[in-house]
Image 1 (spheres, one colour):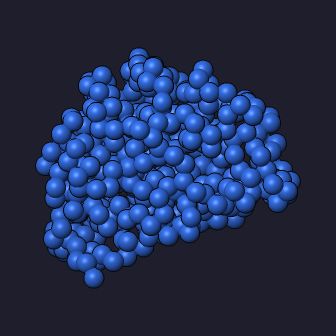
Image 2 (cartoon, one colour):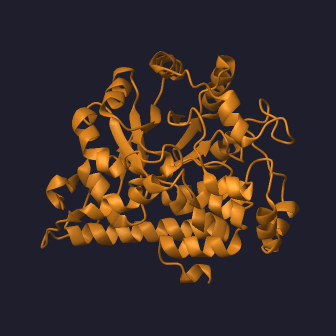
Length: 381
């Protein structure tokens, strides 16, 4: 299978599976426990039907939105995800370039493999910096200060990951950073030698946002231990409120699910919240963001920008989320599979196809701008 034969999410997933060693593919592909939340994230959209209007003169479509003060050419953006240069040697550089070419926002993770300074200097499109709350308050302050000095537009705190999820696929293969592969995992690397060749012939793997604070090069610290030993499970609303004040700019919380938490986020001055169950990778059995979107929008949508991620595979999924009141949606696996399959060209093709699909769907709905979408467009089964 070749890149030009990829026409949708499932095609990119198949191509990524062909090219990645099994442990790395499963790290992207898998969820927590029985992966029920991960599956529900996508199937939730199937319980809702679109109701199009016709004869509306939908010749030209404007897909632009403003989210947390950032103007985006499309109502979707590339969410921050970890370890991208494991999937392709270009990693975040490829994703940032593809996002900038589209005129949309992209995120850089604390566990990212390219420095946020390099990406900020290279691209002037809106940039999110995603970080975790550490036991070391000085480290939290230092990371925020670094992002501010780099010129990051939006600070994002992930709040659903005070400990790592139970990702059994990784346990079976021994996937970790540093690698602790099982025999079966090592065999998977042996049968995909091209990945290994690219890995060793390009710059060494780094975590530049954390390398001054965490030693990932040997046995001292692993990704799993990073979550269990360095992140602070005692994080509370007072801690977050202090961070919002210190940042003094657009600040959003990723991983909000309850109405009560959404109201608290608005009360402490957050610019946005992202409904998310971390792609089904944390608490299995948690509700799908799309299932809960209307309830949260009704409660706080007039006070704070509500976004969502999880399970989005089609332009129609985005239409449904926007019709319920989401200001924009985040993509994760949707761009990680094409990144793994073909680097920047893969991400550009995937995002380009999604934009074309969304434009087509808007015309078929009889809408020329995102503001024309509403719940009148939807019926739940």
